[in-house]
Length: 216
Ligand SMILES: O=C(O)C(=O)Cc1ccccc1
Image 1 (tube, rainbow, N blue to C red):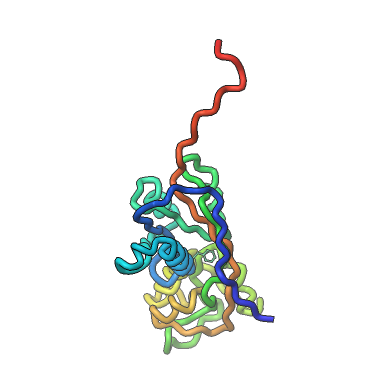
Image 2: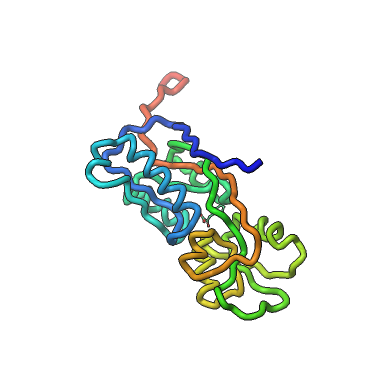
């Protein structure tokens, strides 16, 4: 049975209402992260009806890496950082005392598939496939495990599509929006990835707790 995930938001840390929220995440446009951040922005926009009346949900800022988006959060250029939980270095954000987990939500990614530039010629025996490291395991599933290939790491699924469009690689594991943007067509079936998204804000300072031992 095919199910579609409705975003299911859980507020983890009560944060004071930010008057002008701005989202930071992984770009360029066409990434799953952009869809997740845009979905969160709409949700936060609904909670701020006066702003909605002024012209739309909070802005989404796209960065080349999650780490750059993290710096933008720490330096307060954005107020919220949205990171896929399948990202292997998400632990860096969880462990950073300057940041706090504010929210989590479940949202399916757009369709993922292996794509080639429209009108490209025959593929070599072991084509190169650009991919963000996180979704690499689905390449084998999409190619039914049979085809030889070489994975070329990419900063995002959208950057992977751009690399294929620029002729740097033969193929890209990418999203349907990015494939469309960069003139690629899928050569495999496509699937979504059900994902938990972590939302970080800067830590709110806690009141110092009294030491459990007497002062000397
Ligand atoms: O957001 C994207 O599109 C990414 O490239 C990152 C990603 C993709 C798939 C699973 C986890 C993170």
